[in-house]
Image (cartoon, rainbow, N blue to C red; front, side, top):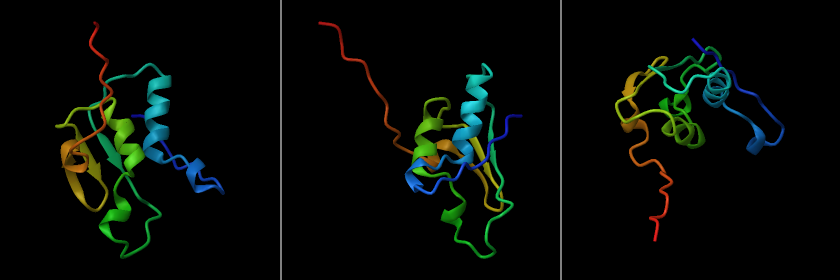
Amino acid sequence: MICGCNVENASYGMTICAERTAIAAAVAAGHRRFTRLAIALPDSAPGAPPGASMPCGACRQVLAEFVGPEFPVLIDGLGAFRFAELFPNPFVLRRAAAT
């Protein structure tokens, strides 16, 4: 189990989400394959809309580099999702064909 946490910054663009810190910690420890992601929201405001519990777009794109469409994502209070349900069309960098 690799844990992550939000690293807040006064400049929102510099904030790093828990999902990305967990992935970075796992990669730094030598891991490249994952079995599932569980997102816990202990400080979530009561009655927050479901979208507030979902990984942001940046986190989804980083996850797309390591997981496939069937990868399970478990979200506290919302249930289990396949990664493809959360991010159906991730950006994929394709190498140009050799000429």
